[in-house]
Length: 331
Ligand code: G3H
Ligand code: 13P
Ligand code: ZN
Image (cartoon, rainbow, N blue to C red; front, side, top):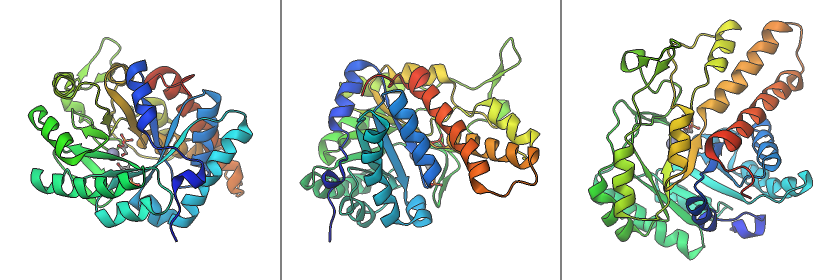
């Protein structure tokens, strides 16, 4: 039995991306794998009237169960209406690594998939991406491809070094694969440790400022494929307040440095129309849970620590939509 995303009330990303590029903002792509995360994402996006991409990695599918996640996404489209505003919801596979995984998601209610062939050779990446696009487009599902490698951890793949996207390849890649959007590598990376302190300079307030993103690569890509939807992965900002809160409450997270918000805002105004954020949500939840554990050692009702974690997450996502991505009021 297959389930079309249309039966679940979801949308693909085509129209959303067109509007985002024209409007100079980016659609948030927030990862989730449990109830409190999807509640926080949807509440924040309804309150800010933002379109939203619910993003599921293959690790999340294994963790939470694919059937349960699909039904949570189905619930999501009903829940947003119940909350009072029918924001468009996309269900997207994050970092799909095989045709079979993408097909399984397409057959089971996903409206968008990423096929990440960036670890393969250029020609193999094209072949794999094209195969996914051919299947996805038969089902009106949108496909994100990737050129260039981001450093950091994605499921079982760990890339020590990033390699920037080569602008001279993008036109050929897009034409030969038929992808609907393209993730590029311009200096972002996955996880909470995107830069070492040694790579940063200190500003007048003593805050470590990382090296700027390679906007010159983004501009060159835009010149070669004008108006084509670009995606930024690894876009967590790693807010200092969460790292401090974690460390003050028994945690130990060293030298965590993310992408400054003003750089993401600048990117969102360009052809970047989808910005992926996962690590910031993990930090916000962990910070809130640790605080309750420290302040109330006798507490053992999960709602008493997951509730505050959900509230912290919601505040974080509302801030992103309002102040960073610019997606608020665009639904
Ligand atoms: O890019 C990776 C995402 O943050 C998903 O992470 O594979 O640990 O679920 P995960
Ligand atoms: P962060 O680790 O910076 O949150 O990036 C998440 C991501 O790119 C998911 O695909
Ligand atoms: Zn990613």
